[in-house]
Image 1 (cartoon, rainbow, N blue to C red):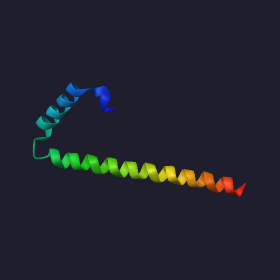
Image 2 (cartoon, rainbow, N blue to C red):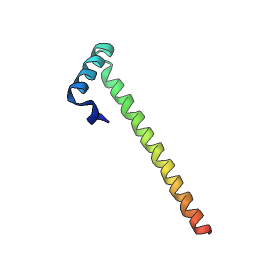
Image 3 (cartoon, rainbow, N blue to C red):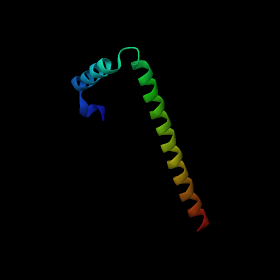
Length: 62
């Protein structure tokens, strides 16, 4: 995903975020984004594990 943006695009996004939110809010925003991504990844892994365990149970019941 980030590879399609490129380095100049990433710098531009960071500068715009700095101007819009200010330097004091950027660490809070970064932490919130990181926490959200962590929770999303955990939920995705839980769904995948549930799906795999269901397949194993179905295979064992046949």
